[in-house]
Length: 429
Image 1 (cartoon, rainbow, N blue to C red):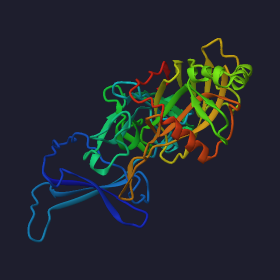
Image 2: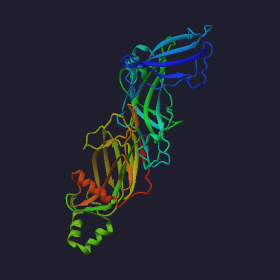
Image 3: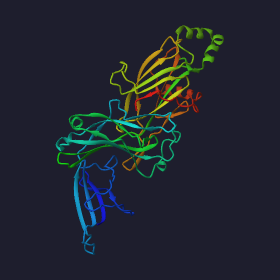
Image 4: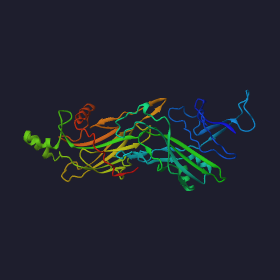
């Protein structure tokens, strides 16, 4: 037997499109022993940027070559056989916290050792599976010039890896009762990528989930599904209490240090006394900082569980948490709980705030590479950032884009570049 296997699918317009060839056109071998099977092959499902399949999960496997004594000639190409394969679909959706993965940007080599996702497969109801194995495969391109502080972002096409990489999770055995749960509803699963964690410096990230099992007659059943994910998004959290904002942003304001505020006792005593009487902390202080992504509790109710916790984030320090969400997500809510560790802080010692984070998209779409450029605050590159500082006379206000631009411009004189990222104390990976 000699020849080539090809895999195809039909798109919504009726066109039959190729997904792979084994062996490839450039050479190589593929051994299929008599009455046996080849080693596993991998192929990419029709993903974003490719025409949508007419019938998801249905593929056509063809063989072209010599299967026996028939031989190629000028009028014959040998044997040509085809087989239509139908895979039951697995539906993948975000976990309760919205983020599939969370990683610590302070790590020497940031990476995702776990991904969470809700999984269901109602199409397996007719398969009569008795037991099965569930696992996930992350598909991505690894960048060749990635810097974990994003100083080399946004990625350029020349920096993209030329080959597709895969990372497989630890297989999870499923008994009949667990399979029934996946058929009747969604179940949140944690996939552990122990042997090969997912790097932070990647583009074109997809998550594939596979179920493989056997029915009562011993027939092999395979179900699969794929989800397009965002690329790792850098979230920066800064403690800006090393600075004090004096004056309202809608008028003249100054960013001052503790020493500069105390110097006002001599240069502008009435203003200094007003700050003291307000009981607003003008000095640097450390905080415990807790973050919940997409909490179940509606703000201003405090979350019962936090995904990222910094036990002590000092003044002029910052943390960096990396997250992975759906590619289609635009903004996702974050609730932040700040608890002051300085007993001298009388006002705003404990606060709960709600904001939204954005997603980083670095992938090819419709044959065009799309990338997300980072923004800068205090010399730090990030996709989403939040910070807090004390202010007089008004601590909380709604700022216009122009006022925020003025503030960020002023912050350029107080860069945190060169400081080490504070490690996350507790993380729900």
